Image 1 (cartoon, rainbow, N blue to C red):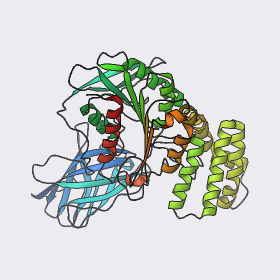
Image 2: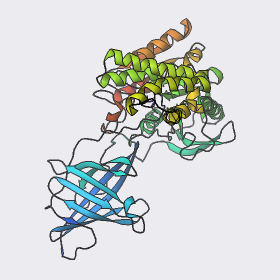
Image 3: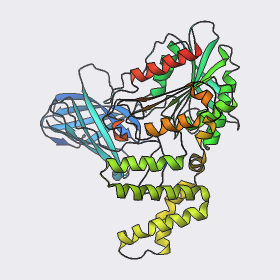
Image 4: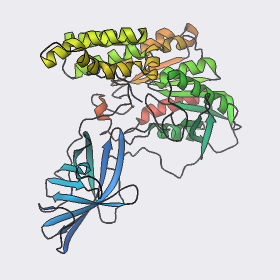
Length: 493
């Protein structure tokens, strides 16, 4: 979904995974005590039930916990997704802290997971984390009332819930290389024919809902548009969900999206002359190319990338560096380095290796205190060298969406959040406006939406580490703007 620059590696393209710890929280009552979870024999004198949300990368895992007090000691258990109940050891509960270890019977003790959390003053939630296999895992917990069902510690109130006033069914579409693109087709009530929209996700392996930190923006978009009279198809990217076929490049994604448009044009409830695309982030690099070669009648770009990846990553790096307090000289140095890497990557492996050696050597001298050996240099550049030569990354660096925008003559809506730190609003909007023809310019609508980030959430800074903590999944006004514009183009009713 999100393209992200890495300063240390000089170049990196990945789905966003916020890593900052969340705000402190708290919950529950009880006196300070410790227990290994299995040795207490005193009568139970109190119980507490909690829901814990573990943040693993950009995925949320919700699991219920139960604590029981035996005299002065606490024990606990954790219910996992497989239906098993795991014992908790080293349990501590007091008015300010919660701590526990997830014991794994039969596994080496060093694989057991220990977590420590701070309670909030209102005693309703707690937050903290632990280290699992060298990776920092954030955890937030909310205390449950008696009889209350487990719930996420990070509520996502906009996620659509059944029953729905429309049909929802699985649909597999053949990919051009023999794989299967699996997705959900939602169809309004009635006989049709209906206009249709295909949702294209951003970078990384996204599921059909474009799920990130529990947010499901494409489930929300699909629900809104289907209620407005559109057939909507959203699908799992290669490498995730039920879709099959090798993960490829942006060219692969362009071919897949084109195959979907062609297949939907043959579906009986769909009007083949009213099929459109809604594309987010790097999906905005895919959509214009698809629209030039397939029967696409209208296009919506949701913070869609409008320049090459080798141009975008330095822009992201500059935003990140300034937010971190870097001087303009430092920003320029970082941008120049990243630009050099991007240009070398598309020039070829030899040029890329030479540039990485040139940029890395001074850093190693400073870090090691002596001139690095050839082996030390080779080890230092191995990962950025491999990353920059990955097929998807090379396609991201090479493909220029402006070339496709120049050919488009269909109505298009381009919206970007004012606080988007991944796809800068002003540059993106100006690039599209300057790229389209005079005829297409009259059919183009562009808007910078105040206070919104890359996910179209209201945000303070737009930094990626805010995505998790914000409960809003998609600004309702932005969603209404998209729905109204599409309705005007397609006239579904």
